[in-house]
Length: 470
Image (tube, rainbow, N blue to C red; front, side, top):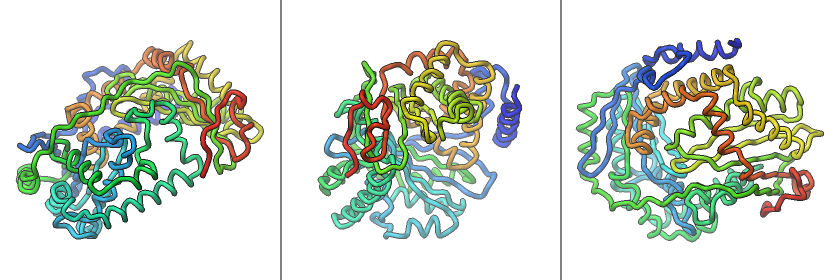
């Protein structure tokens, strides 16, 4: 076994031992999932709030994670960006929490707080010294139950402007910043729930009325659409009492109809070129794949690790080190709840074209599809996946995220054991199969080129120009 793989496995075993994991076996089975253990208990309040508690007294801290099953896919065409807008609004104060008090009771006592939004969920979290846990729970309950008491048009407009500026900085005026939404709008039909960006559009953010936004909150930010994970130095009996006290009287929301999300396939290749304020061209290739509920996602993760990453990965070794034609290359599976995409990105070195690099990458991928990966490639890639999994469980917040994701996406906070087992059990045959099934000619090839340099696109004569910078 190559030295780099032996060292990776040693690191995994050391990390795994710290959370009760056994060393990785040569031929993992589903039963080995018991090597990873996060003890937890779950109960549901009468109003529908799912509560997940896990004790870890290794540090005198606790993490509180409020996971709402709402993301950009729950929005409607013409009314996008609401889920992300609330990520900002939720930190501006609520009925009994003046603006600034949230930070004072978390960051001000040595803790932290933040929130994230994606296509499928929005989460808010605090990590605090455990003697401030009750305060953190009260803060989360107040913005769930009483946010609208303090939300007026002036506060909404202020946060709307902040989000617009975030879009200007991170998307519109960021080199290669519009790639994600170009790919999504090309991959999915216009009314598909994954076709618009999480941050929303300037037009939609401007058009949203106060009542539009409040109605969105009333429907989705309710106890029956939420999962509360509390992990760390906690007394479960005390936490249950606090949760009942602060969340128990918040009324259940209306039943939610989830959007119908159809799988997507592309009948043929779509070739695009986009002019941007960038110094160098860049190539993006994207294939439609599967979401987190499909077992194929695990093999696609391993496929990405075999293609790029360490210098021995196929595309990295060939394009970056041997041919020295690329300055960098990355490949990865991105799994949403319902659908996913496999993405490839290549930065060329001077003197090498995107057309040349696309052909070279295709040849390497085609060979992998024909021959499948080697035993050493599977061992190295699955070891890397295992290392990432274990590292994600090192913190209270990491464990809270894993428990809440399992409950929200799979109906089981303990689904991490299944994920761990399935990730470790990926075989060479699995990788070969998913490479042939998903990495087909039904894909998007996007060339991002400097302004006025469409000739630098890959196969420029076959590429359709998409709207350029404003």
